[in-house]
Image (cartoon, rainbow, N blue to C red):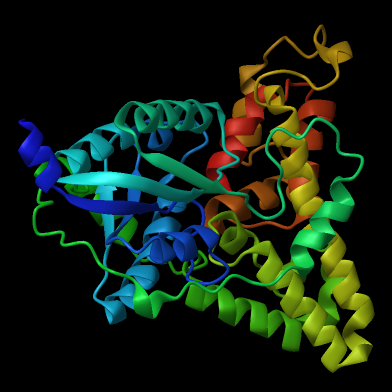
Length: 374
């Protein structure tokens, strides 16, 4: 390609959606719009992540539903989300052949080893092509934090900070007529699977997330502390926001500030809401712990356990995975998780404890199975 054709290419910025599938409290979106150049909104289903043992179609169905609501909203501003399937580097190379990517805006992703290696490769790609990559922190998590001593104070400061509202009305859509590569279309089987309706599962999307949050803070909050530990009652009494938070249909800050506001409007709710806010803090606390000590994905946190529970009993493991241990509460919890994708915190802890303590199996024998079901 000659120098003139490079200079003639349209400059764009890429807004890369990952686990932040929402329209509010979205700093990367606000920055991409403020940049002033046309914006390409992008979500990529990555085969490496889809094939990871933690992955299941139920996760990508929820993401697809969330993208659908996001895309429908953005169509109001003549913008679309490119929902593509492929390697992120291949996608960026393809876009770069048709446009000149000046910057990529995204949230930091606190993911698994594969996603971290992907991010390092994207950073290298950006450096090679002279594109800036601006990442924004996620939910008060601090990348590269050496000590967590002051993290709690910083987390509360982040939760109380002003919510970022992107100026969507002024977004400049990039013309996408040039981007018609069939290589990045969703494979037919995958497309059918993510489009399939599963009535026992929660539905993804920022609109649904708002409905769930409102119903919790206005009505279901009264049952929270009394039902949080109970398998049946928790299905209504708990917030049911976990999947929406995992995929970023709402930010933790939005939920925190909505909860504080609800307590201020009706003080009798304060005790229940404060109980809930501590759970929001714990949610981020353990993600920060994983960010700071990411080796726990592959190693025991306590090295004293390295020499125990290393003999696999496949009969025990399969019975546990299939909900056929003969212990009714254990088996019912596993079956509920398989059929609906949700069980409450106490039952999640019980499943892990039963596997590692009662059946004396290594935590690695169950971690991917549970991750694929949640």
